[in-house]
Every structure is written in structure tokens, then in C-alpha cells.
Figure 1 (tube, rainbow, N blue to C red):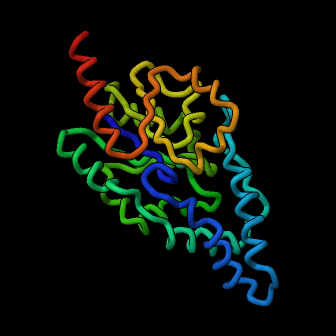
Figure 2: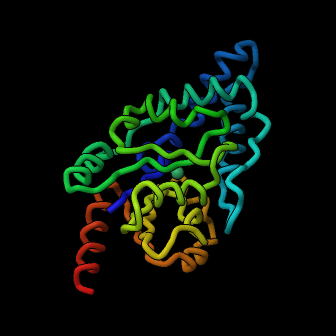
Figure 3: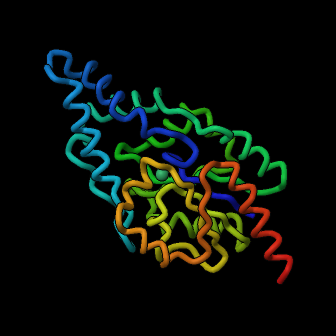
Length: 227
Ligand SMILES: [Mg+2]
């Protein structure tokens, strides 16, 4: 099987620390500025606004909000990476899957600064744990192209796609894809009253921690062998 993991909110918690990262970035770049805490809270709200669902297809090339297209944003991303925590069990789950013979890849969207996702993956220590790292968006590949790349490299076997933003699954993948919503409270809230859109996702599994992926692998394998 191929297991593809999203990054933010899936294998790392880079959300709980967002506001603190803004405070630190403001301290570094705008030391003279009063009310940094309040501004950091506001910037966090704005950032989360851009994290909201965009249903259906889009090019994967989302324009960055103004405050994430500056030197300041680079400082923020680095501070955020420093404060980011690898989710409980992430490394153990990836290694267990690899030991069982599965291909485990990192499959996530570029940050608004080119190269930043790779840099954050490396800072988290997870970059070298994965068998492969595929980053889409940010003017490189669209999500669809990235998915095609996974198929080109690893063939048409069952692919478990694990992501904390289930709306990303809608209209994507193929008949050999099993969709795994890694429920993460902060991003789950973005779904608000739009939970009904999840009915448009076939083969949707929901897990509340990463160890749940092992159960999904087992369920999907036993289902396959019963056919
Ligand atoms: Mg995510």
C-alpha cells in the first residue's frame, strides 16, 4: 500500500503555536510596535481565514494574503517551525508502516514562500523519515499533477490519503484511493456547518490519532482479501 500523509495538522501540530509565532515574528521585525499580542491574535484569525475550505476543484495556486508575501512572513514561518510539535506517535507510525512493507510519503501543499515547506519538514525531523516527499502548489504542480506523480512513481495500488482537511479530497484521487480524515480539532472547526459535503467522499475513514492509520490499513487489507 501507499500511505500519503499531509503535513500541518496531520503529522505535526503547527496550529496551536501560530499566535505565539506571530508574537515572536513581530518582536523580531517590528520591535517598536505597540500591541503586538493583539495584532498577533488578529493575524492568526486572518491566517485561519485563508485556511478555510475551498470546495471542489481549484488550481492549487492560491494567492497568498498580503501579510504572507513579505519578509515578515518568512520570519513567521521559521518561528512557527521552531514551535511546531510532531504529533504523538508520528515517527513510530511511519516506521511501523514501512516495516510492514508499505511506501510512506509526505504529500502536502507548499507554503506561501517557495521552499518553505521543505525547510519546515526538515526542521521537524520528519523529512528523512518518509520514503518520498511530494510538495504541490506554490506555482509548481497542482494537487492533481502531484497525485498523478504518485501514481507514476508507485503504480496503481491502494493509496491511503491521510489529511486533516477532508474537503481537499472532494473530486480528487481515484478508485484505488482510501480517504482518511485525520480529525484535528483546530482545522475540523473550519468545516463549520458544511459537514454534509463529506458525503461526497467515497471510502472515507475517520481517525482521531495517527495510530488509527494502522487500523485503517488492516481493515482495507482484510476487505481486499475477502473480495
Ligand atoms: Mg493539513
